[in-house]
Amino acid sequence: MTTDSSLKRGLAVLRLFAEHPSQDPRGHTAAEVAVLLGRERSQVSRILRSLETARFLRRDPVSLRYTVAWELYARAQQITEARLRRDGRTALEGVAADTGECAYLGVLRGASSVTILESMPPALSSFVSWVGRAYPAYCSDAGQALLFDADDTEVAAVLARTAFVRHGPNTPADLTDFLARLDAARKRGYSIVDQEAEPGLYSLAAPVRDFRGEIVAAVQVVGPRHRLEPTTAACADSVVHWSTWLTAALCSTEAERERETEAERGRGRGRGRDTEKERDTEKERDTEKERDTEKERDTEKERDAETDQD
Image 1 (tube, rainbow, N blue to C red):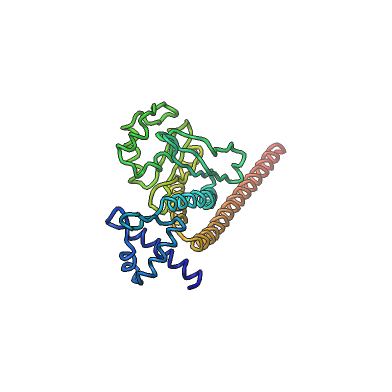
Image 2 (cartoon, rainbow, N blue to C red):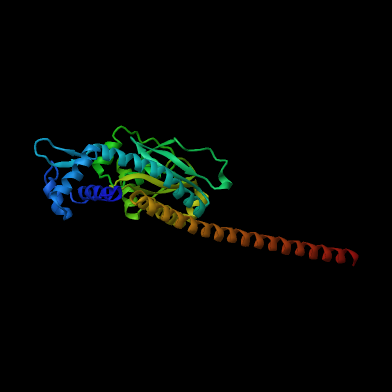
């Protein structure tokens, strides 16, 4: 048996444990795995022992049943975190290109949302970095998105020691107020925070899920209210699109992820060209207006000169 085929069979066994959890909390027997895979028991037993030796599976010494070892979950978590940062940057660059505004990736840390990645358009690159900056979850767009799956009791537990300090004119007054806003955000599919974190600040966020289906981050777009509020629909489309893309990237194989990334970059370049064309067209219009204005001024001067001569 080649190394490649051995690897494929080992992965098939691990996939079975993920897709067909045993009704017995102690796990599957070798015979059960063999039946589910449609393979000989002796062959399956060898694969199970190899996976146990590699610490991917754990064998109960009494029942002789196999379960997934906690080390595998730990490794999967490490891989997810690494891919979240790597692919998260692509997603944020996409949001920044779509909206022309600053994009961020936030995670939940206690009762606060913390920025772990950011992407700024060239025109806004002089802004101070928000990486490592924490915002109270109750007045943060990411805070709402990160709590989408939590029920009222769980949210109350997260915010149990939180004082609802007023940071902006629309800061939630208390837990009941926050829960109502959170419920509206869930129904909408994304959160909108309008001057809750600070005066004049407007932001939107959508949740990102990992291979377990659990929310691990939120894609955000943040900027001045006078710029973002009129473009809420476009900003919402962007954060939802890229949070969905990032979720798919965290759940896909490496080859699938690379194809998706390249495809999105191509679409991003297309959007960038379209945006550039729009900007050039707008500049041309402004130039034409200036020329027309200049002509009108010259005409007016000529009229004034004729009047003076008369």
